[in-house]
Image (tube, rainbow, N blue to C red):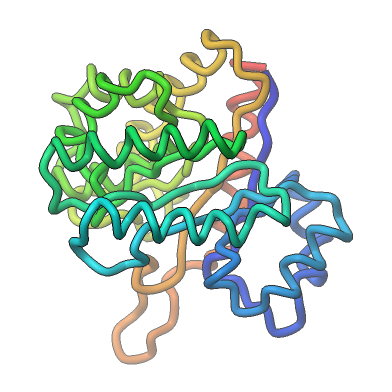
Amino acid sequence: MKITLVRHLWGVDHTHGLEPYLARWSDVGYEALEGSLRLSPDREALLRFLKTTGWKWIAQVFSRDFIPGGSVREHLDSLKTQIDECMEYQPWFFNAHSGSDTWSLSQAEDFYGAVLEMERSLGVAICHETHRLRYFGNPWTTRPILEMFPDLKLTCDFSHWVCVAERLLEDCGEIIQLAADHCQHLHARVGHEEGPQVSDPRAPEWSHHLAAHEAWWDTIWASQKRRGLATSSLVPEFGPAPYQQLLPYTQAPVADLADICDWMARREDSRFLKNYQ
């Protein structure tokens, strides 16, 4: 099994295109981009970069955008429209913010069953992110759907679960393992009990949280290797404000965001190559 490091485009300045970032990103070892075609500030810059470099693209899609609630049909139609917009550009796979945290179990069953059928007809994987606002925003609603649909794929971002549960998921070992067994794509961000992103994962005060997240990522990698995945993909998805903390009054960021992402990418690449290659 190999690892593919993916650079997300959340908060990346497109003013001068994406080519100015290529040397730095290549030096880190990134080989793919993750971002939304619809929300890109410069769609042409994104498509030009992909064509020039030959990098893979993970397309982000958001059922019903970011509007809370909504019916199963509204979410399905929105997802299908966004996926159709991306298909001609040959995405590697889709990372989907999908479903609604307001739904009943039966609504979620209808939705994820239909999305699995959509995925089979497309022939491109759809990975559902464990994200707040969405049906997979906490461990306990996620579990029964994963048990119901063995073929469902996840993008695991446990920083959201830590924030929602207000704890480092000490009592969620079985659910973490179940999620790991469905995980195709990993968002390697470190969260804490009161937020989805620590100020700087390199700082010693966050070492306990970093260790907890890395233990979960190890569980994912071990599962992926056991399942025979050829490639594991990882995004160091630390994002700009309001995820990133800013100093009062000056609004200066408390750390350099690109440095954090690159540090995390290199660290997890090294850990993976040592233990799971």
